[in-house]
Length: 426
Image 1 (spheres, rainbow, N blue to C red):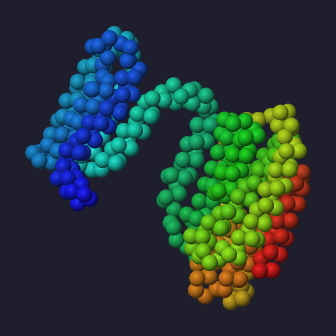
Image 2 (cartoon, one colour; image 1 turned 135 degrees about the vertical axis):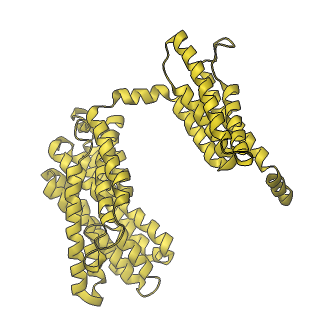
């Protein structure tokens, strides 16, 4: 039966792709025709039948362009646009509706039909569904634009500039002593810090101060708890009444870092998990528990506190400052490693943990597959995590409000003591 099905698909691939082109046009047409479903026949300019035929026409245009002449496709596309413009002109005269969304939808549907036949039907289907979703959420999208303020739009464009424009242009190779300075890796940390402040701003604006803080904390814990610590430390100076909630957020983000460590080890060297899970889980609980207690005891303060959404959506200056600091730390870490020689695994772990835990976790997990003992790898990973949390504790105390530093310091110290004790005892 499997061979029969494969042969059928191979022999009828073109017909099936044309059917897909027809159906994806019908999906877009269903959305287009829904808004005008109550109009009398003939008053609707384009609905499910028209868009289905446009998708099919795009598929046939692509086939004819392959078999006869490449000029068939542009000729049929231009003809479709001409017909659409005539209908648009009539629409403007009758209803004064100057929206060109319908014309754009027709052209896209025509192109999706061609893609389904000669490129990739899955890609065409995905694009058609996304198009239908965008068209269907007109009111919601316009509402977002109406509520968006100028400084928020400016922040979004800056974040796109430093991430999707500048980041790919930077060289992804090491420079300096030991090739420790990777411009793309360093700038990625700058992007992460900027992204945390941006996500945090809109999380608070959408969900409110309390849920916004929690959402941002979990998000940062999965990406960069260091970035969140820097962000919340600065915010504690602007809103000291929110120090307990911000401290809870830092502890949650730092606690979320530990499950990431277990995932890395599971993917690279699962043999480490048997001994590593205990200190890692213990350190995580030492942060989650106090975070929950601090949050619950101070939850009423949220009702009297101003929203953090009135602050800067993109703390780009802080991100750039941290990028410069990270560069300095990487250089110092390399010098420490060279000074310690072959016995410098723990020194390297401590130096690496100052800036990042992921890189040293991945490195030690790989090394433990060959030359490095499991015990030393586990202790190195725990040392990196404890040093990383100590650095974030120092950031909270030095950059943030004094109350923030005190509330973060206790659980952090408890976590590192418990983690190191459990790792050494194994």
